[in-house]
Length: 311
Image (cartoon, rainbow, N blue to C red; front, top):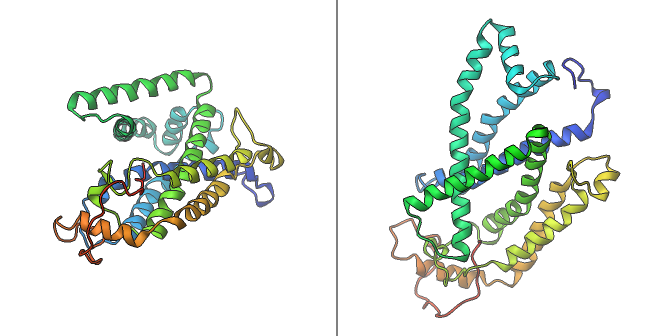
């Protein structure tokens, strides 16, 4: 919408939902980094404090940039991003546009490095799920090269219409993150209340096992429920067509995945699991165990317990 043409009567729900869910996808994409900095917090910081400060930090850091980008794009609707930023900056002060472009280079390099770091960790984790690997320096470098090559290939593939292709890529990312986010939040805040065994998470044959069938079922059902509501450049679900392209798939996937996971978890014996958690982590340093308040005088059962991990 051109600059100065924002009117209440002219509000268009489809562009609004596109931007809303693009911003949501951005927020969700940072959720995988939470453990990278929350692990260094003092023990007296509660999970809700960690969650809220992380959320508002990410929101504040992104909101102002999105607002600037929206204004610049509205003022220069037919220009590329770099040219629009330069022209807007020069409109404020001669030469400021060039300074802004140079200054943005450092931020782009930082974000790109973090993204490659996260992508390489995800790749290594995925491989380690099916085949145990030793994360040596050589393996880490190879994973970075692999993710770099994959990202470059996608960028080259989308070069014909990069903006539209990137928008669809963000949308797909949102679809993939939606059930995962719902399941993780329900598991942490409702099912287990943040009480996990630090040791058993890394123990393939431990109380969590290798696969969480409850999570996989909830993810599959939640994702399938979103398909009729999907709205992308290459596919539009039947309900999305009825809504004139409005994308509300996330509003469907979140509750469906949550409900299915809660129903699947009704068969879990949480109290027994928490006793096992306390025993597994009892010799860790004080405060590190996830369920210190539970009695540790219960013997640890042997064998595979049937409780799967969150992988």
